[in-house]
Image 1: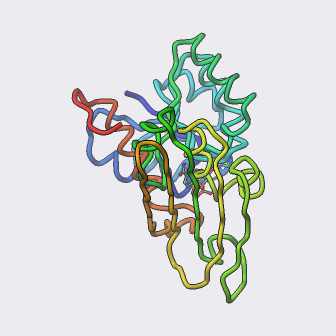
Image 2: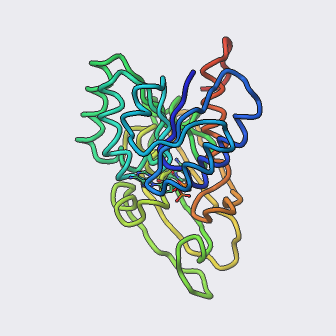
Amino acid sequence: MKVGIIGCGAIANIITTSIVPENNGIDIAYFFDKDIERAENLASFAGGIAVLDFEEMLKNVDLVLECASPDSARYFAPRVLSEGRDMIVMSIGAFMDYEFYQNVEKIAKENNAKVHLPSGAIVGLDGIKAVAKFGLKEIKLVTRKSPKSLGKDIDKEEVLFEGKASEAVKEFPLNINVAATISIACQRDIDVKIIVDPKVDRNVHEITAKGDFGEFKTTTMNYPCSANPKTSMLAALSAIRLLKSFNETISVGM
Ligand SMILES: NC(=O)c1ccc[n+]([C@@H]2O[C@H](COP(=O)([O-])OP(=O)(O)OC[C@H]3O[C@@H](n4cnc5c(N)ncnc54)[C@H](O)[C@@H]3O)[C@@H](O)[C@H]2O)c1
């Protein structure tokens, strides 16, 4: 499987440096970034090609991995899918725009392409998907981040946001992909609280779900990527796992 990457930052670096040395049939071969130097650095590590022209990459790959920004997901997804190429999208917040979601779904279906949204920086999506249509009565996310990761300079805990996921992704588009991921998984606009906390050095996501099935709570305490404190290591690792799953005969979990 030939893969091209849009956005050669923190996530792309972790994925590429993990996958390429394994030589396991996932050929990350093309790199595209608005900062060409970033694309060139990763291409040189991978023995791949840094492209200035996105179309050159598109015609040569089976799958495009977006790890750039919500705007780039919105811009490139329709183009990628209209060429029948599959896509992994990390900037999941883009999918909270229902019109965009439906348009992408339509183009993908018409061109026999698939869109994959990795579980990202949280655990528990398997359970959320399983109960979504079976009596899920309450689901909420509390996210706790350090002032550094939210670009704040404060010395005591502060609730930065309380409301629906659709509003959270508008106010914090690069920070709250997890709220979008959960909302899409259970097809509802979930309740979200974002707390900036000088006592934490990790990105902490606590999900609570209650309903006819019982109740569950998951807490993920993620180390941030050194290259980008907004991004959790686990987000990149979930995309690596997803890429590898395409070559597996038996899949476990979801
Ligand atoms: N799904 C999740 O759980 C999750 C978790 C963390 C981050 N993310 C998202 O993944 C994306 C990447 O995160 P990151 O930490 O690697 O970011 P990063 O800032 O480290 O890297 C992004 C790279 O994309 C490039 N870029 C941005 N817009 C572009 C465009 N229009 N065309 C070409 N290149 C472009 C930038 O130059 C940069 O090199 C972000 O949108 C982030 O919000 C998702």
